[in-house]
Image 1 (cartoon, rainbow, N blue to C red):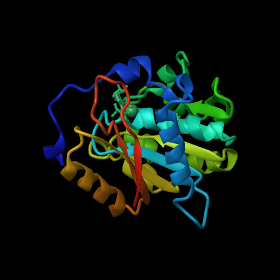
Image 2: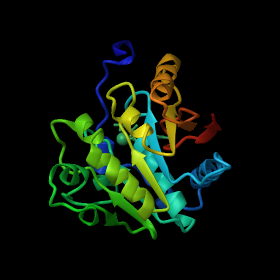
Image 3: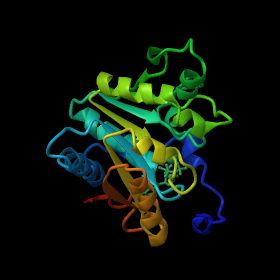
Length: 240
Ligand SMILES: Nc1ncnc2c1ncn2[C@@H]1O[C@H](COP(=O)(O)OP(=O)(O)OP(=O)(O)O)[C@@H](O)[C@H]1O
Ligand SMILES: [Mg+2]
């Protein structure tokens, strides 16, 4: 697995400044329209049952998981759905910065302190119908917390309380968290960043999720024109 790890420095700007909410800053842009299209594709990805919980992951770091998760959450909320975006990337959280929640208590507090209730850890945002659940302080044992019984119970409870819950997860090839989460939700989406993701790494990530019986409902190609000058590239959604 280590062969896929690049020895480059991890980007930290989305942790410090949050991700760019193009769906909020430019609601009638082409990019926002692309997120709406992805939303529609997700809605129709399962004819039998409505998708109520999603994990957003990727093979490696910085492929755009948090950006895509947050913008998709906005796209679904705009449609009138009650949406919750959960930061399950306990090592590299972004949601508190993206939604300007200063020093919040969050998921790790809930998972480690029994006095903290679900109602204490989610926050309303400036987008109607959109709520967020930030990560809380980074714990020494993130994977253990994500795999805990309390986390499973929380996922079940949230599924009943919201129309859609999106989990922003760490990369599959770094830690087991996304694999664990993928087994507890309706669908997993793999974000692939053009010109950055390596084919073999993506293949390996898909294999790992399938290995635990996680259900991959599609992948999103981020930054498809690879144009780092113009800020956002094309987002495409590819079913199975
Ligand atoms: N389409 C895009 N065009 C330009 N920049 C992008 C695009 N998508 C993401 N970025 C930038 O790339 C960086 C990484 O994005 P993001 O934080 O969403 O990725 P991530 O997969 O969640 O990373 P991590 O593995 O750290 O959780 C951020 O600085 C973000 O603004
Ligand atoms: Mg992220």
